[in-house]
View (cartoon, rainbow over the protein chains, first blue to last red):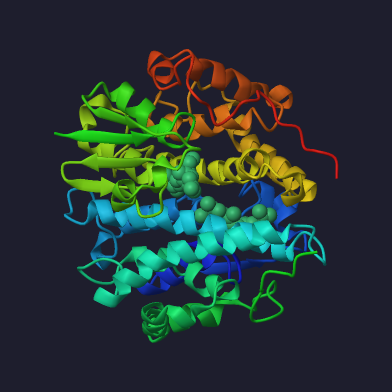
Length: 220
Length: 221
Ligand SMILES: N[C@@H](CCC(=O)N[C@@H](CS)C(=O)NCC(=O)O)C(=O)O
Ligand SMILES: N[C@@H](CCC(=O)N[C@@H](CS)C(=O)NCC(=O)O)C(=O)O
């Protein structure tokens, strides 16, 4: 039995999507970021830090999305979605997994400061502007790659692409994608994958963004 | 094999420097100053377009993610026993802690930005700073819980590359959260600090540091 602990539109979507790409049947438990469900005693025993994702599989529980991606690719190599030790693309595969979190940390910081610190947010516009610029600068190298090919790795679709699954759908709330044409085309390619579509059907309703774009607020 | 590490004292590149010292392999170290724009030169941006450290040149390839470097170096030098390769009974835990190092690292980075990088008080939000400090302390609790069984390092079978990844974060975290309520974590940190390879990865006495203070209090709102 595989069980995924999940919040709609969060990092756990990376895993939800990868499971669909592998055709693995999983039970999905839904949580909310603001309803206290991640802080409940029962969830504490599953994830001591109270975060998602958490994946119960093969009798163990794994917490970090990057670790889950690596573990699934190594233990289910028949799907060819990882680049295992010895593979010529091993280094870029690991680099993209790490980079996904470099980028996601900026998204998490923007989410925190725009959405979860009160309305109006006490965060300084200067910092919000800085973070949005940092996010845009992480999109630039991806844009350059997507001008050259369809997926992050030259050999084709891989779990590195699913690792970006949360990022590419959150980033447009903070950065205008008009100037990232190749990334928009990339998102359209993702949205055309049947496994992605199935994953979105199971994702649940996104509950934190209440408008389509979060501009930097005016200086006080 | 040619290995060159681009490094800033007290930054995430410490993880990799420390690991290279533990592995006892030959490498070249290139040091930069965090505050003087030396990470913004055209030459450096060719290596790492984001202008961040670490960057690792290894046999012609360039890597820019510390976690990826640790995993790859442990694979390249299996005889040192610092990785837990696919199939190892501790593989899953090793991976989970390797990635968890960045969950810790991200809170440290947010706090560093607020306390050290944004020197203008009006740019800071004390709400955000105290929230981040609480979140940091919460993610450290997971280490405390792991260590209650008496193990010395994150892996039950002994020291490994993930201690370099996580240990760097713990060493930073003590500047933002008090470890009094996390005695297991404090002892773990002492054990790490006693390792010669950890000490070899620390700044020289007269070096310019990112962290001038031992502890950073959240300012009043
Ligand atoms: N590095 C972790 C980060 C996990 C994480 O922070 N998840 C967020 C959702 S995207 C969360 O659970 N936040 C809830 C909270 O911190 O209270 C990973 O990649 O899995
Ligand atoms: N995820 C990357 C993050 C690297 C990173 O952000 N490094 C910081 C220092 S700890 C940096 O170079 N910051 C300079 C900047 O962002 O301009 C890693 O783990 O290597």
